[in-house]
Each structure stands twice: as C-alpha cells, then as structure tokens.
Amino acid sequence: MAQKTFITRLKLTDFRNYAQASLTLDGRHVVLTGNNGSGKTNLMEAVSFLSPGRGLRRAVLPEVARAGAAGGFSIFASLEGMSGDVEMGTGTEVQDDTTVRRLRLNGAPSRSVDDLTDHLRVLWLTPSMDGLFTGSSSERRRFLDRLVLSIDPAHGRRASDFERAMRSRNRLLGEGRFDPSWLSGLEQQMAALGIAMALARHEMMRLLSSLIDQSRDPSGFPVADLALAGFLDDVGMDTPAIDLEDLYRERLAANRGRDAAASRTLEGPHRSDLLVRHRDKDMDAARCSTGEQKALLVGLILAHAELVATMTGFAPILLLDEIAAHLDEGRRASLFDRIDALGGQAFMTGTDAQMFSSLGSRAQFVGVDDGQLLP
Ligand SMILES: Nc1ncnc2c1ncn2[C@@H]1O[C@H](COP(=O)(O)OP(=O)(O)OP(=O)(O)O)[C@@H](O)[C@H]1O
Image 1 (tube, rainbow, N blue to C red):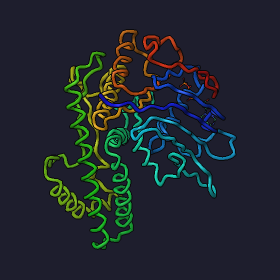
Image 2 (image 1 turned 45 degrees about the vertical axis):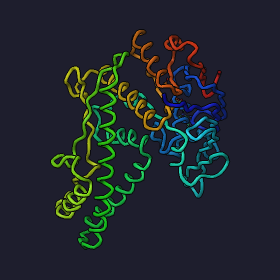
Image 3 (image 1 turned 135 degrees about the vertical axis):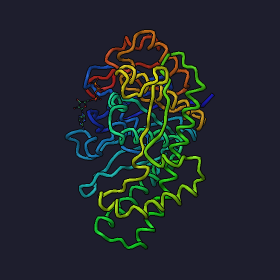
Image 4 (image 1 turned 180 degrees about the vertical axis):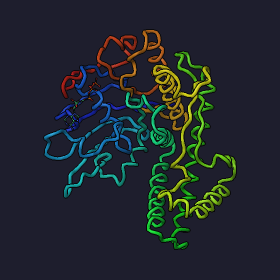
C-alpha cells in the first residue's frame, strides 16, 4: 500500500479572493462547502500551486494576486511529503513590472519549482475539463503530458526544450534561411527530445491501460480504452528509439520546404492526440453523453492516481472540484470509497455538505464564505 502525503497547514495571503486565510488539517479528506463564488475552487487552486506549472486554472500569474493587493500572492504549506516533513512557501513577486514565481523549501530559496516534485504529487479534476474529449487535441495533449509529468518529472523540461528548438527552426524557415548547419543542429535536438517525449507518453498509456485492465471498479465508472495517434503512426513505437530518432530527423530535413510553406512544423509530438473510447459501448468518448464523458474522465483520473501511487510509492493529493454533482447517492458513496481506498488526501468541493455525508468521519468539513474559511 502506498504511503500517504498530506497537508497539515495551509496559509494564504492575497491569493484570489483570500486576503488572509489559514487552515489546519489532520490528514483526512477535506470537503469545502459554500455558496457559488465563495472561494472553494480558489483554495484548491492554491493547493495546485504546490506542484510545478500554473495551477489548475493555468492562470496568468499577475491575475492570481488578490485584486487591489499591493504585491504578489503567497501560499505556505506544511506537509508530510515524499521526503518527510517539509515547509513549502510559494508565490509571486513583482519585479520591474514582471511577475515571477518564487519557491522556498524549509525556508531556503529553491532553484526551480520543479523541486516541488521531490515532495508531492498533486492531481486534479475540475469542471473545466468536462469538454476534454470534444475539445481541441491541444487540450488532450496537455492533459496527457500532465499525466506523464506526475510519474516522470523530466517530461516538462523535454517538452519545453522541444518547443524552443521547434520555434527556432520555424523562425529560420520562415525567414528563408535554409542554412543546413543551423537547421540540422535544431532538427537533431528536436528528434532526440521529440522521440523521448513520444516514448514517455506511450509508456504512460501502456501503464495506465494495463492498470485499467487489471482493476475491477466496484464504483462502476466505465472502462476507457486509450490510444495515441498523430505522430509516427506509420512506424510504431516498439521500433528502437535510436531508429525512431534517425527517422524523425530525416523527415524533418526532407520536409523543410513543406514546413516553410506551412509556416510551421507539420510533423512531431506537438501534433499527437490522445484517443479515448468507452469500452463497453465501443464508442469514441467524444460521442458519449455528457454524463458518460464525465464518468470516463473520473475513472481515468482515479486510475491515474492509482498508477502514481504504485510508481512513486506515495498516494498523491487529489483535487476534485464539484465531483459529487450529478451523481446519485449510491454512485457517490462508491466513488468516495474508491477515493478513500487510494490512501491519500483528497480535497473535494460542493455547495451542499449533505452530498458528502457518506464520507462521514473520513473527511474534515470546512465552510467557505466570501474568502473566509470556517473550519
Ligand atoms: N485575483 C482575484 N482577486 C480577488 N477576487 C478574485 C480574484 N480572482 C477571482 N476572484 C473571485 O473569486 C471568486 C471565485 O471563487 P471560486 O472560483 O473559488 O468560487 P467557488 O466557491 O468555487 O464557486 P462555484 O461554486 O461557483 O464554483 C469570484 O467571486 C471571483 O471574482
């Protein structure tokens, strides 16, 4: 059984609609209830900032600090993490009109927010992800990359380095500078990084699919069949990585003219798509009903949380925004049982505490009222 990671204390300053707020937690699940617009999702967003990136809303950093606050925001958390007890402090500072993210671990400044992954994995599901299957492939790629990142933290660096090399290549091609020595260097980098990204995504799919196949889900969330498409579909990812790299590099070199005409690189991991099918209905997720899509997504997130727990040995922190809405009592109860069985700390929100009654003493209930926390 995976060990638990959990937050014991949280303190927010000038974060969204919170001027000052603090919360002491005892390791149980946390149910946040309150009216619309009271600050439930904001609190979850604060927890999501305890992982690299821009949080569960993919926020533009300057917009996160409380409107009217003089500087940036700050979040302090004490937690029992993957490397023992740790104090985390993160937030923003405004320097010369630029907002920069800061991180302190146990009081010492940290080089990079990526260091957060030494201590904690935070996964989330929010209503804004409801359109994942019908939305653009870029949203599904981002979703997939977040899944990969939680078991392979180097994935984020690979993806941003690939993007940088691709942008440079696009710029050279756009300016008509076909100098092979520059282009070859960039294409070499793109091939190494792009194939590493694609292999990491495929490995994630393989692990998640096998876990989904093995687990018999008593809560009845539908089984999803997962596949990747859109990059090197004609080759197959079981080809040795070195051959895949050579092949992709050769294709980039051969397609310079075509890419220059299109003003972008037409082949690469930036064009991949995650394909999800409802197994029992044998139907593309995008064609399933809204409720079925939501159920597929919940099933995927829970399977992913189980995978993270298995791979890291630590159950992740889960942020589940409005997860209980639209579920009947029986389904809700089995969902809570499955969340509980993960062995981690889950934060859940809803407007009505009654909806979470079957959690009983397994959860701490916290009221949220206009940027105030009422434990
Ligand atoms: N930077 C900010 N400064 C001050 N207030 C903000 C800021 N950003 C968002 N808000 C406010 O936070 C509130 C939204 O909070 P949040 O999304 O957490 O609500 P919620 O409790 O999850 O509501 P719902 O049940 O409707 O989802 C809104 O009133 C919004 O105006």
